[in-house]
Image 1 (cartoon, rainbow, N blue to C red):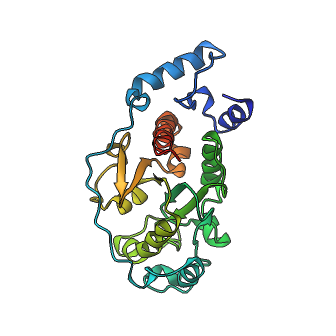
Image 2: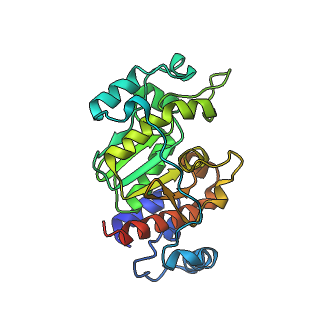
Length: 260
């Protein structure tokens, strides 16, 4: 691990556990680090093996309605003026997405929060800082060969103006926009960040836990998709940092296997 990557991992509080599996591991600096690496290897043995494809059927291509022939500018204008669901009534700004429009990596989250709604950009709060550090640990950075989007483009809130997951009718109304973004980008790998993103993209039952979707390569249309926990979840549950890094290693293996 180079010094720059190590510094970012330390800032995330992830230490030597966040070491890419395809690289030759350097000796741990102390017994605690060595034990942590050994524990991760024991917990996630499949990550160093050949990349498996999940036995989850690909969902049928859904109709994108009037978004099907849109270019980027038309699509962004359509999102900005969208009134297809009730989320439009409470938004400050729509959050279209950000990044390289020819990216090989697409990261999809749930929906905007308070900070994102105010700025019109995805992942700009504490969870966004963690996502940026996760990208750096992978040798990536925001806007460079990466694109970041959400399932819904407007902030979902409850009666007390607190963030909440989007409802099925809200995700259904907004999915054609994301579908068109994916078609325009044509990424090599999609990383679904959290339950809402994973279940929406894979068309699965809302009761499906994220934990059951990890460790396998799924398919969205004809594109490989890897599921991991949302950065906001990881901020509350740092004990799962090793699991998230294992998921990102699987995504990197999938990307490398595609020869991208």
